[in-house]
Length: 64
Image (cartoon, rainbow, N blue to C red; front, side, top):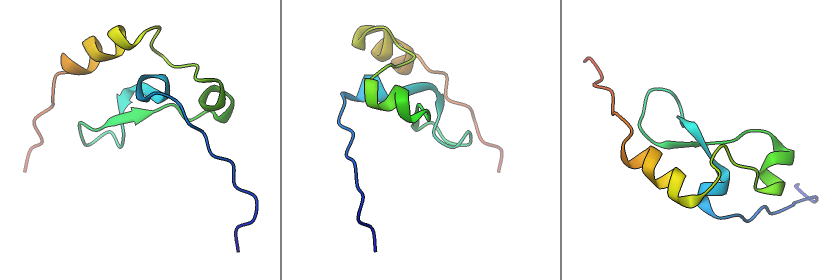
């Protein structure tokens, strides 16, 4: 049974990283360091920078 839960709520861009979620998809990944998550210390300085990065992210073609 889980009894010690802490919720972290931040804007999406403050949780995002510059890498994909799994490395094999184009899903936006998140920062992994718990202190950075709690503090909203993103790899992006602004939401505008985040949007520009991910809107221009080159999607890799996956060979099947």
